[in-house]
Length: 252
Image (cartoon, rainbow, N blue to C red; front, top):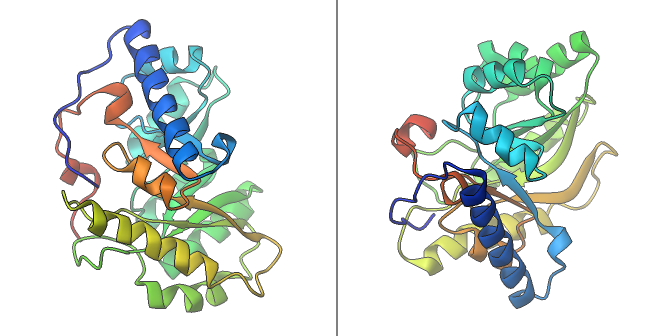
């Protein structure tokens, strides 16, 4: 991710609408540069610390799929906004003792990097009689502080979870290097795409090669140019958060 100056908080539906229009235009331009169909990229609004009133405004603007890092925050929001047909994507690191919660309400989990979590999630989804879309998190920046599997571990991990039929594996997610060097950031996205392309053979029917979740507010255009199908945008839509990124992307 490329560091950016603080974003102004959107407090009215007009301000929020303008922010969404700006991001959608930038997505379109990035797709044009990469000769891609704009429909091949899904914008996932990341609503960590965003209050319910603003989220309801986003819903009014036509968005009903939101990403959350913290399980407790996501659970509280899903309960308080149960009157709306919202789908929830949990995109942060997950401890095994929180699996039982996301198995109840989440549609998607984007940070799978542990066999223990996969086993617990399979068990809880069987109890809930649900399935869940999951993406495997890969540490493409080779930073010890980041979660995610090393790229060389992904193939074996897939083999170990391929019998978990409640996990609808939609493919890979990554967080790029936090750097002003755009080429080093781009390299993280290229590595994820190349890893995906090299693992296409012999996948079970409930696994696909469809999704690459990569790119956030500071680097999503580069990610789209390198094949992202999901971009996770928070501050560029809703404004700067009051808590530092380390609270949501904690060191190991």
